[in-house]
Image 1 (cartoon, rainbow, N blue to C red):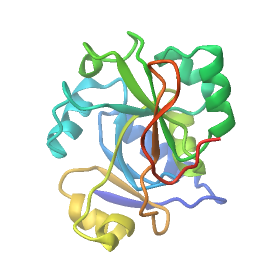
Image 2 (cartoon, one colour):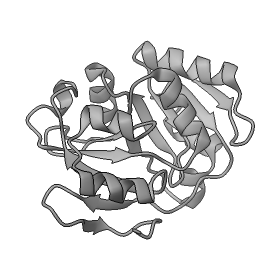
Image 3 (cartoon, one colour):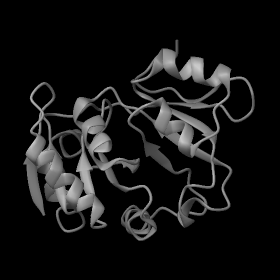
Image 4 (cartoon, one colour):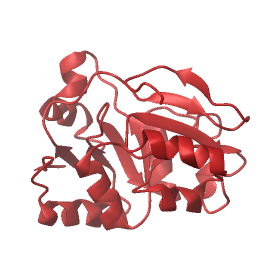
Length: 200
């Protein structure tokens, strides 16, 4: 496991390339978002997704799965978005929101049989740089820790997950609040979890 320091405002392209190589090889990373630090992998690599589901004791067939995209055009490749949903998302993204949308069939086996996918475009330069350099979404799930420091401090996150992940991208102390989850699958937006963001 390596720790790579990549900070917003001074993104180290060489380190971004190193992270992308890990993802392309099926590796797992811890990386910053605009909310909690997250665990991620290539969203088109089914075996890597299953590794994360096993790590977090998630039942992939029953748990809502989410991806991080670089922009709205990438979102449209993996989820069905109508005009009203597009306008709502454009007004709130990048930002601390997870939008639940109807999933398209381009997603891998771990997503099969489920009708929806969570979509994020975080307001975090490092996260978006990784996704842009990879050229496809990252499968994502928030890290868990036994206390605030172990959830927010990358060095302590590395201590917790060092045996299970390949790279920890350190970008300063993380936030304590999760994203606001908005369900867009049934017409009117429904807030399933109020987190850091206030929906506009």
